[in-house]
Image (cartoon, rainbow, N blue to C red):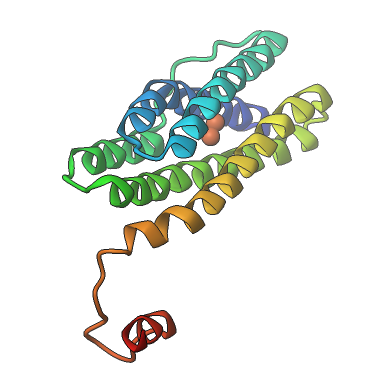
Length: 182
Ligand code: FE
Ligand code: FE
């Protein structure tokens, strides 16, 4: 049967997010385990707790509309999780691995932010105000997680870059020049 209502699309998108979140419940402990930086590891652990809450918010929405939460696989998240697994397999040393994990995690957060932004807009159009407030709580957590990752990157990326002796191509950076002068 042809799907012809925004509500059907909305429910499909919610199922996609449900699949995405449940995949992250499994993936986040692996990201935490692969982290060297304690704050990064704690960040992943905290986001795991939030992610379990996010799963239950989606379950609440499905309960309200009397629909099943499963039945769809989020292929986008499956790809991101696979890329993350590839990263973990790489032999990056401490801070380099942490910098790579932040890159993985920020891709995930941006993907989720896009997905939740879409369903929020649909929920608003459909007049599902209770859904909107649940979706917004999750959206806020995803945005805050992304910002925390940006903050962690500011600390971790320079540590990851400490092995760089000099820049071969182009002008040396100010920092490199200062180091050489010293
Ligand atoms: Fe999430
Ligand atoms: Fe997230």
